[in-house]
Length: 94
Image 1 (cartoon, rainbow, N blue to C red):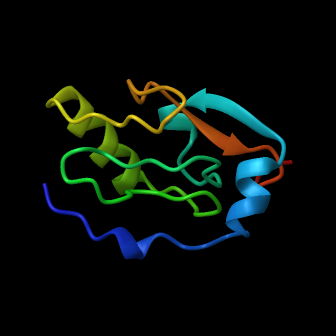
Image 2 (spheres, helix red, strand yellow; image 1 turned 180 degrees about the vertical axis):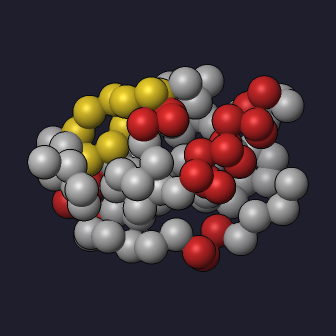
């Protein structure tokens, strides 16, 4: 599965998402939320999502199917990709 990393929308500053108030949500509930962690699968070692970026379904699917196929996501709070750290104060979260 090939994916271009640059397509995710930057919704807020990376530092605000990473150091701000966050919550851990099931991966399927992270779609449409602002990522609060760096998600870099190995291989290939290219970030799939960075703090401050708006997660879409394609990114979450890529990470979850990759992990089920043997990819590692060592920088994620939950390396199984069952849950993803997202900003509490993100777009659409009221």
